[in-house]
Length: 307
Image 1 (spheres, rainbow, N blue to C red):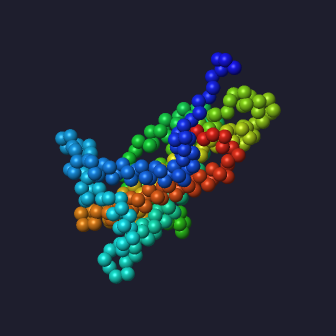
Image 2: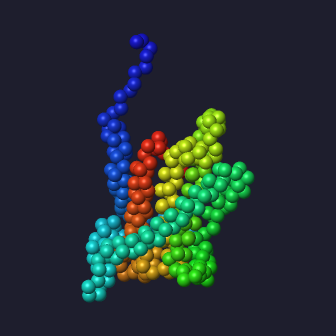
Image 3: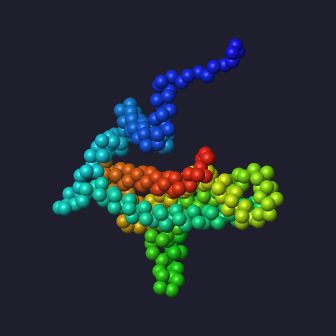
């Protein structure tokens, strides 16, 4: 018909990019390749001694001591940890440390999810609780972990409930949960408040109480808000675990490995980057575990909401 606008067909190149970005595994591989390209491009083009404004360094150095090539770091993973006889390969040592940190991070994530869920339910149920608690929840994230970790370990070491003694890894799990509860509390609260007023009034017209409305309306509506919050909480739990291991000196995890391998920065530059790479992979693994949880709730995933 005259005057009718016809849809503009997308070019083949744009369609190929859209298909790649929709495939999450391919998009993840593409993101890693882009990161490696940026790293190598800066190492090639950036100033060797970096750039500083006064005493503040704005650009890092590009020497082999400060920025080893990505392939050098990957090759170092296949070599022994040390020159001792029968030493394990570096990748195996990093994998074992990542497993230890993963166990603590899962405990911290679980505690954080439970605490965040309880706070979100309380704030949704009582308006006064939201006004009183939500500012404190936001304010809690301004406390630096480096200062908090020694205090938690000192307080925890004095606790004893019957035969149960406070172990050092419990302090790390508490610190991890400290970072994990925040996105869950905020995201779940936002999801619980997302149903339209007309739907809430309809539930009231049917005589449904707060519990029935929560189970049949608010919780299903909160799933698109909750899943991104759970992924962010998982990443925060990994960060909190590694930082707490560094601050408390807990052996066996990636944080302690970061401290130990930092001494080899001058003699073996790629080695200190190995536990950092392990921490990155650990964060991706926890996000993948939460994604599996999201598949179980796919009937409620109309569209995820960005946290």
